[in-house]
Amino acid sequence: MRDEPQTSTRKDRRAAFGLLFVCLMMVGVGNSMLFAILPPLARDIGVAEIYVGAIYTLSALMYLTMSPVWGGLSDQYGRRPLVVFGLATYSASTLILAAGAWAGQSGLLAPLAAVLAMALARTLFGALGSATGPAAQAYVADRTAPGERTQALAGMTAAFALGGMIGPALAAGFSDRIGMVPFMVMVALLVGACAIAVRLTLPENTPPSARERRPLNPLAQFAFAGDRRVRAFVMYGCASWLVQAASLQAIGFFIMDRLALDTSAGLQLAGVALTAGAAALIFVQLVAIPALKVSPRMLMIIGAALTLAGQVELIFSGGYASIVLGFLLNSMGFGFARSGFTGGASLAVSPEEQGQAAGVTAATAGLGFLIAPLTGLWLYQAIGPTAPFMLNVALSVLAGAIALLHPRVRLAIKPVGPAEPREDEGGVV
Figure 1 (cartoon, rainbow, N blue to C red):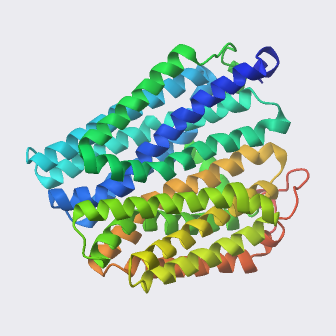
Figure 2: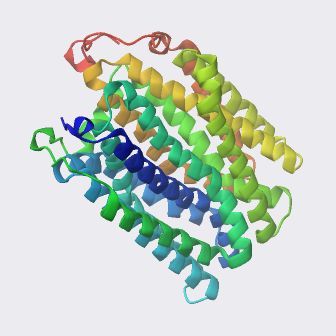
Figure 3: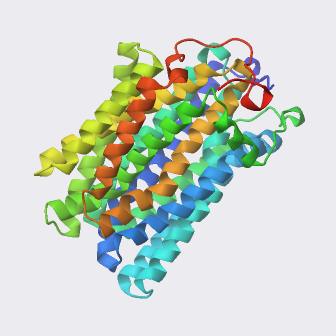
């Protein structure tokens, strides 16, 4: 283990964590802006909704595959180099994304060629830019005592959420004034400035530890998802992320088509809805859940019920207010659901298995965005605007059934003791 918590002052750590918070927030802004920008951009360059999904799909696959690898490499080469590498790559990938969008809008590239360029740019982010998150979280864990670590890591997670909240609003406001492509360039330059700031000012006085080498093959970690203790939470997480990812990808198109708006007005209203949804999610995680103090199972039940209500509201929405209400209910439900299944999986395993449980529950996000272009945008194009939300109703019902009925979920009320045997070691299902 690293010993820097004893050699650095609290003021030094606060400044370092503040810098990382800003960096992760900017990455969150860059990621969430796409949900507001891509639907009207697709209409501008003249491509169908399903092709927008390609921009997300390869990136999600690479993020799912590479995040565990970058976490292991940060043990071998240090946290700061990996944070800098991830931020720099993210900045470069966003510049390529902006170039592809500009070429498509100006007619220098055919519409599908422009989409391919943007998809490759996001793939670069998924494969290499994904180094930032694991390395930043490991940096914080290295420098906090066990009693304060959970709160410190929650702050890093909140940085992404805050970026997700303000990203669509910034995209809507700045794109209307300076254009979508210049806004993407601005975000890329700001993230690049973050990389320089980390390289020059973030302290890392403790050398990498050769004793902390981890397997770099992510497939070996995914097998833990089949363990009988966490399987139900992983299934619930997959269903929840599928609902969330499909909703995020479809909501911009849905607002434009349901309200018969042009791309400019659609961008504005989609940005407002996405910002409101992100604010609702942050409220649930930072205010509602601490106030309720209920079990992970109850959080999962509440989450499934709220996402179900939100999807039904979207299906029968008659105007902008009802669309926003449906999206707010869905976002609040996801806030409850995510805290429920991640907390439940953590409680279901022993202390020495916490990393594995966190890895497989985090992987559900990548899986959700990998499949969502089919469950969201393809259904939207092939069947109709409400088709993704109808499938989300079924997924919410499935998640609710898991939370209500699965015996393993009912046990997620307190930490377990020594590791239980896995199925392949003689455990009973």
